[in-house]
Image (cartoon, rainbow, N blue to C red; front, side, top):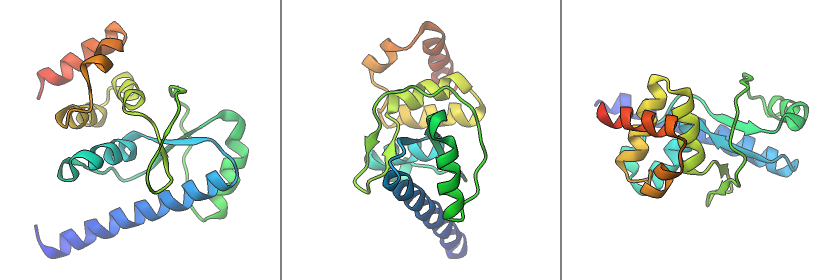
Length: 158
């Protein structure tokens, strides 16, 4: 990989994390309960264990309660960030606070969301989580049958 490509990727990563920190700080300051989900949360969990195995998507997904939507919209717009609204069911467990002060969904919640959506990128994220040992036997056993079957399907394609 050329230095130009690496530098471009580093700038992309820096911009995403800068945006994540600005949004997270603003939401926390306003008392909005949130958690980072999706590819960014997957990246953060994997990066903590095996940085070279972490891959990043091009956006940041944040889950909030519907009651905080108006306030969250105003906050995100006030810091100059763009957003797209997606309505998904997100498990309501307690988020994990990173050392940087960002709240992320626990691995089990991410796994449930990824196995429920089951798009190609979700399957890759499941492979990534599994590849570094973040999907424990206890976690797997706690999944509903249909999600355990999907996990087995993902593992069969590795």
